[in-house]
Length: 116
Length: 97
Image 1: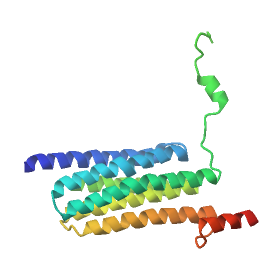
Image 2: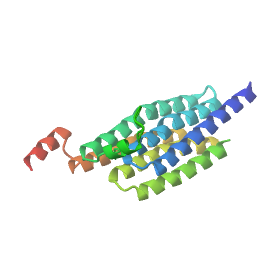
Image 3: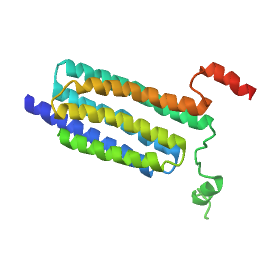
Image 4: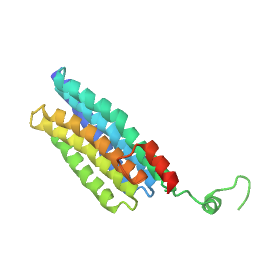
């Protein structure tokens, strides 16, 4: 039984760490602020939750798990709120998402039926 | 196991700092600092487990609370140019000037 818990918690920790890294790399490489919001969301929600679940499995039924549940609930509710607040502040302060201009869409899109 | 998680978190925090410094707009920086704070919470939790000290989780919980408040405070300051007034009062003030 102990073995299974260790394996499961290791798997959760590995998945959580992987997601945190993916989100962070996303935050670096994505071109525009509003796309980086998505990357930051990945790390804050799923990455954090998986790591915390991995720790919960390690701690078993104890006060530590209660604290971990509190932390994960709090992060689960506040990190999307914070990300929304940043996006809302950016949008009201006039930061426009870098949309693909119409010409680019025209240039790249393949017309059905037209033999361009 | 936790060593791997801690290492991954430290690398992620370094990358987030790069985004915080390089971020062109203010909001990239606020986003990076908020993400950095969440990672600090996880790092404190992981270190708490590494060194077998469960009290660290209280610190992690507190840090999660403060991190959120800090992000909202920075945003409010840059949105309304002051922190003292409530958003209603600062909205009125905004119409005056």
